Amino acid sequence: MIVRPQKFSCIVYKKTKLTNKVFWLTFKLVNPLEINFQAGQRCLFDVGPKRNNYSLCSSPSQKTLVETCVDTTPNGPGSRWITLLKEGDNVNFLGPLGNFVLSDLPIGSKIFIATGTGISPIRSMILDLLEKKYKDQIYLYFGERFVEDIFWSREFERLQKENPNFHYIITLSKPNSSWQGRSGYVQTAVAEDLLIKSKNSPLD
Image 1 (cartoon, one colour):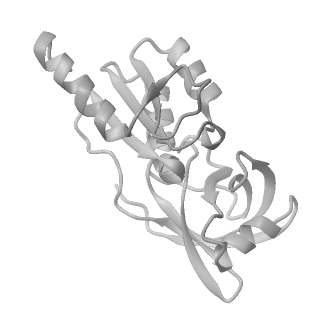
Image 2 (cartoon, rainbow, N blue to C red):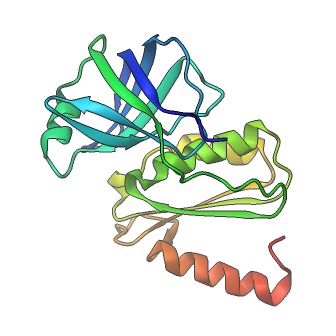
């Protein structure tokens, strides 16, 4: 069930620079103290005189904190606001919003495909599925351009070790000579793997 959005006040609890342009922000709720949302939803943050949408990348079970991951490459008002935010700063937002959520289908393999900070709502969905002990296979295909663009790999690799049904596949479209992983566009990697699987056994 989609929860009706409401206004929240919070503080910047933690700010982590993941790459040269990507920030991972954790906000601690002040009023109200808890939020209910579905994995994949977003919030509308007050950014100076305007509001910006940022997807939540945290698990819905984490009700007193919300997390988001933002690419500041555009260098617009939102990017500059994110860059200048400091731990302890007060922030307001409206949420949760959006219908980009998982269906209620209880079974079947899940294939997630993302690039850059588009991984934010996908991370929330994967954490939610794994916490709920989802039994079928979960595949995450994550595409970046350069090695220095990669983030959250340690977390996804750890989740892969802890959950036999979770598979993390990263590919770079412009790898350097030292890159030992897969290369090419992420959609190509998905198409290749689906073709191989279709020749052997179905995903489900």
